[in-house]
Length: 397
Image (cartoon, rainbow, N blue to C red; front, side):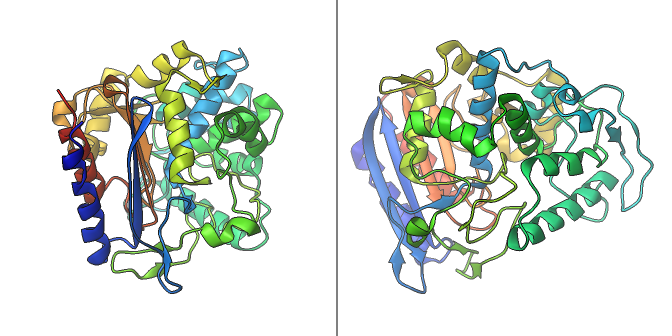
């Protein structure tokens, strides 16, 4: 590895914090199961002069999905869940789902032609989205926006909508397309959280702690940040460093209390080191240190899957920023790296989050890259791609 080239990561982070594109950010890189470098820049709390550090706790948002996928596959290994299983057999409220392709705030739903499957939840082919982005969104998306508003108000106030209650509410909203016929990023992982609860007979957070967090040693990962750790929780900032203190997707800002709605798609808080442990477990065929969390064959299946050809074509149009990738098992998976918008290699997989946390696992190069930040609407943005470019151009061929 060209360690001299890796030094460019620090100057990149410093440039983006100094220009106020992001308040604080850190990067952790492992290769061959050894730490190759750690870099940080900026602030977790500008007003109080608190630096962004290695133990800074962040809201992971959609990087929660990778954990939810691992939890689901644990149940699959145990014979308690299977990909072709109908969702309605586990959660009866989905027995009579409807579909509506009408746009606007009114529509005429009709019964779905086939049930939602567990695989639809893992591949985002269920028909559920994340709300209306414009007036011409489908009727179901407008209804989903109403649910999101209710979730945001609830988490900031009474905190009574549970994971199971969420599933009951969204089951009443029309799908945006027939299950299994299209791709749409949305609430599938949150519904999967309710499935995991029902199948395991345990609260979602308890199941994750017992089967993922404790075995992997993710001691700072949970659906809330207890009082003794609140000083480590980063604030959220927009570009230009305006602070953001709102709720989004039913996930609160302060995170100081256990939420009733444990969001499998967006609800976890964590640190760069905790997610590195999770990434190393996946890289090492489900094993970390002496603990086998998932079986090797399961990891191979999870991380080499592809969407059906007709759905992949629709994914390519809708998710153009993920050119070169497919999406299965709540993971992006690079199957045509030459089409990707940042340097990578075939088989690299992972995901990102609304506020910019990023996980990249590369079996071909025995590499794990984790970034965290708390920047509104970041996802995989230009800084992430630039850091990836530095990392991959530093690899020995």
